[in-house]
Length: 163
Image 1 (cartoon, rainbow, N blue to C red):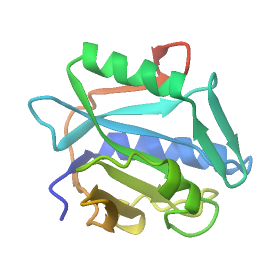
Image 2: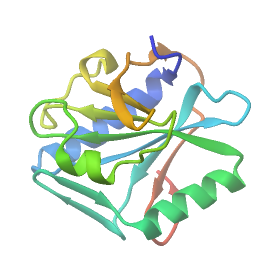
Image 3: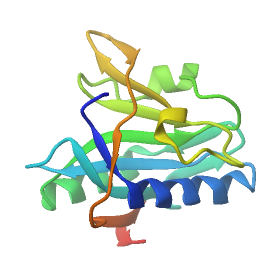
């Protein structure tokens, strides 16, 4: 187990988002956030919106402006961005693009949800990696928790809104 925890409602909303975009043959994703005091319990889901976001088959890209909008909002809300999650059409792996442009920051976690048309709702069926010592290494999926959903938001280059 990675030590991270993901709320079941957050997981459900993320899978719903991935499935919706997967049915139009596009990758998608977002970020999992936690309160500064409970850094391992990810109860906030930030779904990628439209402005500054590129989605298509085998491509999901978030612009630096959209990243800045999300991270600034998170800092204002006293939240920590703990993990990035995105979908793949096929299997869960870190692509060359993921490796080149991913958040290569010690302690940061990334996940790939495979088979975006009909993804598994079990985080253990997704790929999970943590960055450290200059490389990504496989890590265990977060434990599922059942708590009140903190918040689901949508972010893009222009704004953060409630989803």
